[in-house]
Image (cartoon, rainbow, N blue to C red; front, side):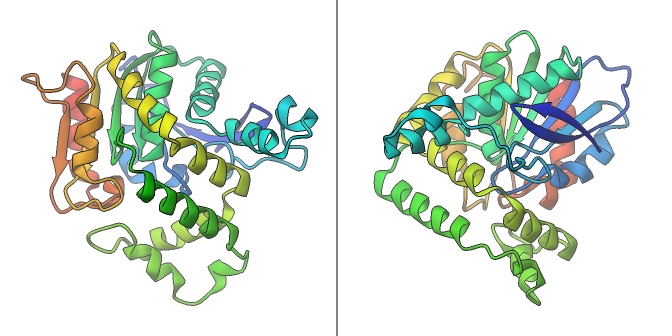
Length: 298
């Protein structure tokens, strides 16, 4: 475990040894998670590829200190709505993509394949758009979208904000609660150690980051902007969906993928994993690894 100061926050990351392959695989986790969930996959891929995993700003161990950075708009404006929007902007998909760009420069990584899960997949797409020369390609796991459903999104935003608000620090000490997290959003229960990790990351996430990413990524403008980003990417982009993912259903994954020029070609850019939920890197590690290796070879 190492750290780099990015956007005023000490970012925690793990970087494996270089290999004969020039590209580094960069793993980007999803909402309320951390870099930890990539480890089983990295254990298998790092034999042949250098792998970088890191905690997004405000998640995992990349926590803001007491002197957190606040945008000038939030500091100077007397308008509460403007101040709130300024805080949300700090946690936009674009801001996280820029964080990643700075981290790659700090680590002198000039060629990267980005592998993002859920929200991390959206960050990866934005990063590829911002760094067309550095980013060789993108693989999105359980990540899609591009369709704005007003009532559904409003319910999701409201529920998400309430969930973030009520997270007492003693929650991980509640007997048996980790078992609930072993079954949430997956087809078959994952190992209890992962349920425990999910519970820890859920409580640890910085409230500003948790709410900020939730609100920014689910606005109508942002939902409609993401397909535009995908459409202008020149790099290869692949989408991996779980057939039983109830968080990001395959139809929404395929919808977002359809905006990329590669969609519908002989080498389709959408891959589905049978009997898999929202945590494909844990539920079907070997299958995901095989897909990644096949994509990189092509």
